[in-house]
Length: 219
Image (cartoon, rainbow, N blue to C red; front, top):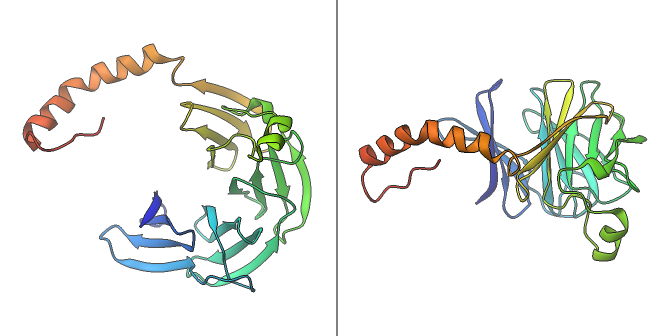
């Protein structure tokens, strides 16, 4: 069972995180299993305990193993290239064009921590208060929860970072140095969403009619 699924257009494959947290699996679009990144449970080298997030480029897949507090980096044939320990607990990971890594949230009240390609900690950047659903550092410490609980991190090309909060229907966009570029609140921009839904309504009604009464059409 998978807890999420992503399509990677440059390779024409699907990546999904196993709900058990044991690994990330890769499939062809026809459904054939190609390989598994991670998959061996344990606390030793190359082993994982609980993968909570991952990031992928055409050449690498990085696994965030929150259970062991480390990152494992594989090539796209699932060969382990490197692993390194982390200084603190993180929610999400992204990869930089220079082969380094961004992890979220950063220490104290920063948005991101930057790690070098060899796993060495470099610096903290950005302001966590600009997250789409921020929790103050004090409140997070009191609750034992990370800042921006439930947020997801992704890259847009090689120049932008997006932090999305499905729970609050909002997202924040940053440059690669952690500077806030823009914020978008889908709930606040309800009129825009309503117009999109109104424009799509004839198509969804037709799809429902074609599919039959016992079929759900996702909008």
